[in-house]
Amino acid sequence: MDSLLFKYSVPVWQIELVPVTWQVLLWLIAVFGMATAMVESTLAQVYKVRDKDGQFRGGPSYYMENGLGKRWMGVLFAFLLILAFGLVFSAVQANTISGAMSSIFGIFPATVGGS
Image (cartoon, rainbow, N blue to C red; front, top):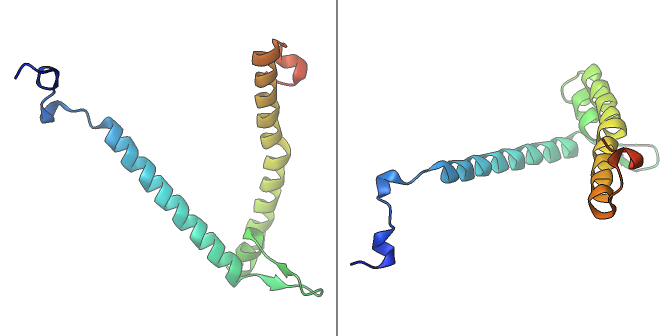
């Protein structure tokens, strides 16, 4: 009975459940993300339109305008998306590149565009 298994074992009521709680939370977030992706894909198929060349057009701006009847929401979404791709994502990429250059070659991050 003095084996290592019993010597260092912990009673069940003292086991910390934080890792299990985080796993459940991550699974719930994943299921929610999959559900929203499914809804977005379905809306894109329902509200797509065919242009004069026979090509399909659609996306979030289209189903905000056609499905909800709120053109302003589609325009705002498109504007914010352009803003995010133009400023936010390029800044994140520049920061990542400057961090890599700094850690590998020892270059000061501000020299290559980082902070």
